[in-house]
Amino acid sequence: MRPLDGITIVTLEHAIAAPFCTRQLAELGARVIKVERPSSGDFARSYDERVRGLASHFVWANRSKESITLDLKHPKAQDVLSALIKEADVFIQNLAPGSAGRLGLSYEALKEEHPSLIVCDISGYGSDGPYRDKKAYDLLIQSESGFLSITGTPEQPAKAGCSIVDIAAGMYAYSSILAALIQRGKTGKGSHIDVSMLESMVEWMGFPLYYAFDNAAAPERCGASHASIAPYGPFVTGDGSTVMLGIQNEREWALFCEHILVLPELRDDSRFSSVSARSQNREELERIIVKALRQYTSEQVIDRLDEARIASARVNDMHQVWQHAQLQARNRWTEVGSPVGKIPALLPPATSNAFAARMDPIPALGEHTEKILNSLGYDDATISTLRTEGVI
Image 1: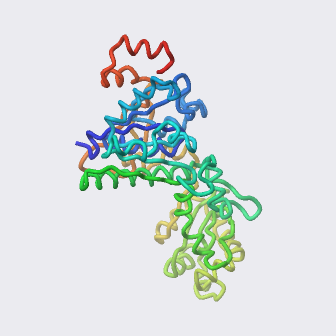
Image 2: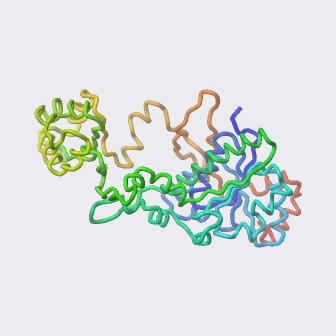
Image 3: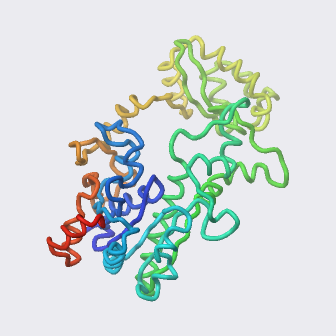
């Protein structure tokens, strides 16, 4: 058994936040029914064609689901959606602001008829407040949350290279739904979960916010280096490669001076004798480190750092991550089906010895429409009529 076997989730989702949430619920055994627009579906399906014609975002966030097409603006679609929700334990949506309410799908509209239903709304700014009706995308919330103000170089802000805001919101929706299912098991009652992308990201901004507490200066943008700890970041070695290393405390600093820099006298140098002192004098410190590392290749530097038990990392590109020795050794790659055949997929990061995560195919648009409608009691003739009329 998987933890969510027997749980049914109906989701009106697109892009990343809600799909990432529901994919993880599916991995725990939930049946996830993804309602999509006829002909086009989730617009993330057309972001690119990088995975043998499929979109990279969609492949990542949508395995192990069932897809039904439904034109929610068609009057007959409401009967189908109502039947789906009647069978659901959880209803999730991240439609444009106000859309769910106009469709009669708000928690307030659903709770009387479905008192045990858990409703999760994911939006840019939450269900109230002056920003409630603003559209929100990942990059826009990176900006609003202050993330861009501390990320990048002194000359230029930079966005995160992955959908960090969508991931944050999706994770809070995921954990909140699990908590709501536990709560319902105790009370028998459903609940309403309101997840804001802005609030999810501001939570992740906790360190820089407190660093700038009471009008103090905010962390400076410093590229791939740490804003308040030094040395902590990328350093070029003698073969032109880059090694990432981090010194977190004075014990590590002493080892670094003795075994890596081979300059033990720096250990007690007043310019570098504490975390804050090293941060204040980071430019001078970096010159010393680069000069010392110039005589070694990156592999030699990594080996020396490992011997001294100082944290380090290679700066891998995407191709190197696909071949990462640690992932290979732990057998973290598997395959899932898709409309274009088998595609490699990373197993969920949290491994349990109690069950195997579901790793089912990525659905084609509307692949399960007839099967789902049959399960709701629609016969083939009625389904054919719904298709002719553009309902599905």
